[in-house]
Length: 115
Image (cartoon, rainbow, N blue to C red):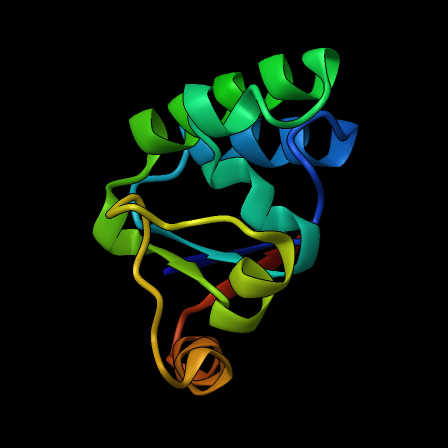
C-alpha cells in the first residue's frame, strides 16, 4: 500500500507532484491534513476562495477524485472544520484520523510519501 500524506494547498507544486505520483499508483490511500483538505473543494466552494486559488482547487479536486476513489481518501475532521471545508462524500472523515493513519503506516509493505 502507498500512503500519501498531503498537507499542501492545490496550487502548491508539492500538491501537483503528489497528484502525478498518485496517477501511477494502484493501491494508494490519501490522507489530507492541514491545508491539504483544500484539495476537496469543488466549483462552488472554490469560488469562495480567490480566483487563482479557486481554479487550482477545482482542478485538484477533480484530479484527486479521478485518481483515487472516495473510500481511499481520508480527511482530518479538525482541519476540515478549522478551514470551513466539507468532505461532501468525496472523502472519509474518520473519528480517529491519526489512528487510521498509524494503522496503515504499520502495515507490512506500506510506503509513505509526504507532501
